[in-house]
Image 1 (cartoon, one colour):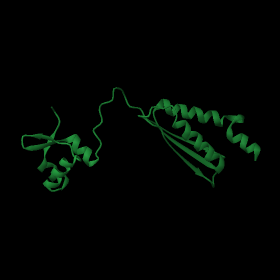
Image 2: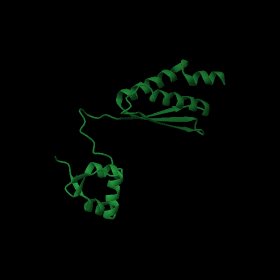
Image 3: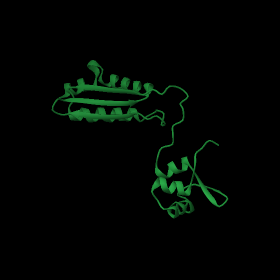
Image 4: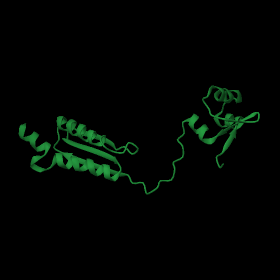
Length: 151
């Protein structure tokens, strides 16, 4: 058992609480503790759970890869930017590993008719979203070209 354990007094001191308050948390079930004889012992993970600190991450089985991509699209009006943003967000939220979600943020500069899309996530999922964007914006058949022709 390598896990660090604390006494009620140590927890109270660390949190700046009275010993009775910590015992009250234990009795109320807010803080998990093990009773050894007449004393409680609190595991570090249980203390971290009470304080909201994240559990230490476990070593990954392979290298963790995260891609940061910024896509800039010129000649975009507000309506097209809204549609593109919705499309990208829908693409980012479908069919990917829920444990490693894509994070997408879009910004539209109305004065410059420019849109930026920031994508953060795994390499494969980011590549799928970039392929989707490429297909939608591709040359003469792209979304922006058709809208300019309709304007």
